[in-house]
Image (cartoon, rainbow, N blue to C red; front, side, top):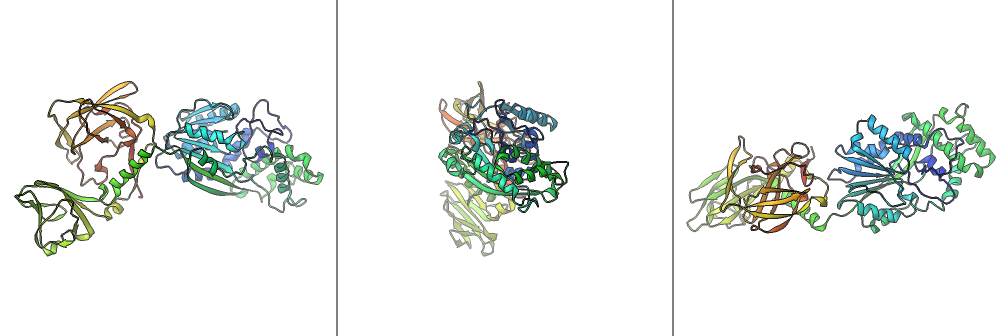
Length: 562
């Protein structure tokens, strides 16, 4: 819904207001009192009621893989978009911007009635003037507002700069004004409604130059990437909604005051018969009314930093690629010359006197090394592809008598149902400078592993990581489970309330004490344990690695198709 203050050549755009939520309602605006049954806010409420399902379908379609928590609704009116967004994103807070104090007051009353007042902030503003402080939203919703602005291109650039990198702008516009009557109605003057619209179009074509525009090129020019667009056909029959009659009456009453002087007397008389609520020809007595129009929707994203996008792609490859963690069905560590067997891995595995890895298997075991079936004992060079029964594959890596053995199954990804990773929206506010601090030489710490029951593991912890968040310094213990890789496992106040209760990981390059580095919490990941619980018995957060704040950044949960 939109109500953006704007000086319009030729007076108030009442015809358009009549059929779709566009009035400025500024104190200086010329008011057409005749034939207006109620406030413009009433019309907006009718509009919201009649089109509620279509608005909900738009919010459901939006291309989001990270639910926004901060949303701005530009031209919020009495809250049609605001409340649809609050319903779609239960953790979100919406800043509703509108030029009308009356509309915002009604919006606040609705928020209190619906029990969401703590999730709504209202701001009265003219978007053709300097924008007030609207925070740093992760989504901006602009429904039927942009075409009213004197300089929509400038508004799009402002919206781009206002959004956090990676944030989404949603533009919703009407392809045309709604129609309510059949083409052959009323019986005395068939085609009356279309002639009324033609009269209104003639009046307002000069100062609503962006109405019906293709916003795609302007969005691209403003720096956005178009992620999707669609056309929604609206056809709400009066039999399905009692509000359709009242919506048609209110809309056409408002249109009358603008187009009356441009209609022939016969058309005006027929229109007045429709608007006479006490007469036999009243709109409210008709059973053939419907709301017919089209809504155009664009979803445009302010690109996140390229390096973050590349990291996300690499992260998904790590999760679901050819050797992705979710596809691992067995793993083992091979050391020593005595033959070893492992659950889920055929053959006997050992190392030789020279430190090479070998596997011993019979023809029935179905083990292949480098594509060659093993009958007896075969050497397994590090990195050589392995094949196992049931279409499983694997590889071994290592040297000098110490090897890691991995078995993967392509079907494991399908069985898991994992289709993606839910993340918090990218937010540069969660990027900090950190510093490695000296720890006692040779420090090793004991940390519980994710086994049932919990079992301890001992890890090298060569340094600590110091970061400052909101003026407070936090020092976290760093584990080095993989040489050269700093693993910071931590908990925070989102655990169990937005993220898993076992904590999350931040993987960084290892450095010596005194080394400074970028610490980007947007790259926080879930534990490998979530990807393949039977395989990964990962460490929990060390004692003291708790941040007493909500880290609303990084990965939140796995997305599954069931």
